[in-house]
Length: 470
Image 1 (spheres, rainbow, N blue to C red):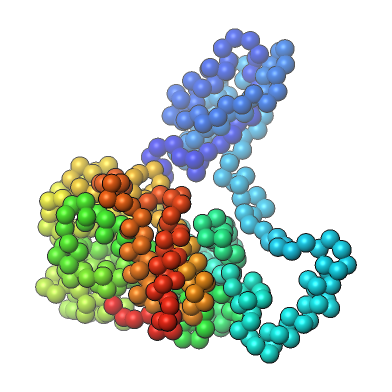
Image 2: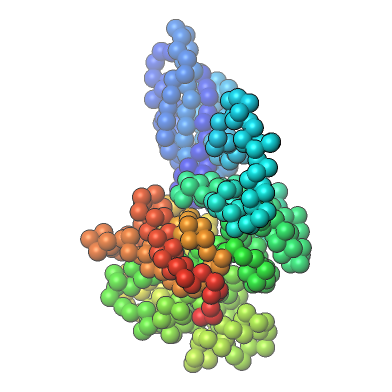
């Protein structure tokens, strides 16, 4: 639940008020007295007796929105006609569409775009399959694939409920990198079926973006698809998150004057995102990391280690710490959370080293209240848009895929991920850098281009090397 009014719970209330008196000012007062924020007030129809007005306001959640409506209805002379949830209105009919890039105004154009002229193009591709990248949408198209098993912070809600999220992802691809992406929501959570389905639809796409597939299945799905396909496969929950975290941490450590190879890092979360963040941090030079899951620190002496946790135990926690997260945080220079809400408090952050860095990235509710963390930490980042330093994957994945598609890369390498993180960090200039600005805005005009250029350069001559182990 939002702690302050948010546009995510924005409503528009269409109502009538008497034309005379102070009814309009009473509407604003009613919203504010209910704890809402008026963002727009539009008179849509004016008459001698009444005014029809659309009042748009932000609320904290759905119950709060209803409380605002009740408060408006209590204003003398007000008649409520309709209440619209602006978020649901945006999603009506879906958020994306397909449009033709070529005109079809007459028989000549139809004959070239479709039969009989299209047959010549098809035969050219049959003779030389590589021409598909040049002569079809393949060169600029990405499949956004999910099974609905780990959607946002909502959990296993299934493919239909995941579709609005995947539509949003496709819209972001278009907005920030001019890539045509399409949501593919699979009604199966069987690894073999997912892999086979993606394999057989792959000829129509230039890249595969795996999204919201739960761990540990996501690791196997990605590994097998990388082995099978000749186009790049990128699990954004893993690698997009890792790129953004490394870029943000690079700049946060610049703010506090510390070195990645020397700091102690406590990482909460050993799932898909946590493991990918860890691997990229280690590849970038981090040496002292303790990873905790819900059972405590991951170490070689634990008896419940699967392959993924065993890898973590083998590459971290050299001192064999076996306690809980609170103990791991004590004395640490950096806390990174990609786990669960409310697992730490301000007293825990107070035990960290001087000039601590806190990344509480669980969304929508972080591992610790950002306000509490700011009392003790020098730099705080979250995944939320209502606090400074939002670490958002949209900073990474559009540019990464733009670079991959432009380079006609066949795989994603770790060198590309490191290059993307370095480029993203560099968008923030020395003059701009500060405790409240360690990553650029998602709307910064240089972000996608800088990341794309770095990936494109890294892909040159090395696109077939594959992912290397950290």
